[in-house]
Length: 236
Image 1 (cartoon, rainbow, N blue to C red):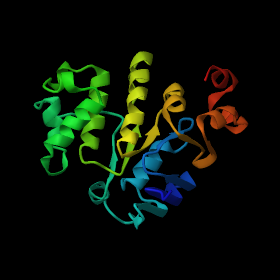
Image 2 (image 1 turned 45 degrees about the vertical axis):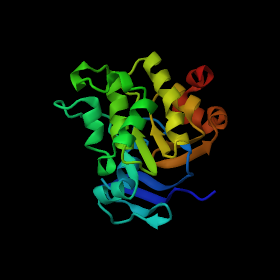
Image 3 (image 1 turned 180 degrees about the vertical axis):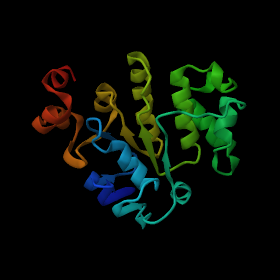
């Protein structure tokens, strides 16, 4: 199957610090890919790079077309969307209105679809301050989805959620991918990543050290040593 997203040799340096070193990643249509690693491994830097927020060396393609040199808003228009670790909603707009202003051509049908997909129909007319943290997170995801991107990059969507809320989010993510939007998931919640993703890629010190199914990654000794630790790997 042809990849919807392809990164080749993506490298990022901040001064003398190498944050990413030649990262390769392919994502197929409808695929849910997890990108994990310890703090400082380069996960968010990878998202920042491919979405155009930091300079990088290498090549990034979406739908077979190069994104290199393009600013973030142009990448977004071509179908590369992202969320941020901190959800900033428009406080004077309802959830439905927050999604509507981000919808491509104001497509109301897209808004209704995403509200249903993310279990936000009951909160559609609520104001942001009335939402739980889990609902705020899902609203942020919905705002990125209404433009119908080819690839959605989720940067720690479970941050600030309790275990139950994280599990509930994990049940929703495969539906996003199966609806036609490929997903790249970065999160520290190993239960979320290993239970929901088709493929998991592991970074350590800016380099890929493992990739495979959740079962393969869970059993990889390099992952155990670099990230999970023996007790955490057993629990996972």
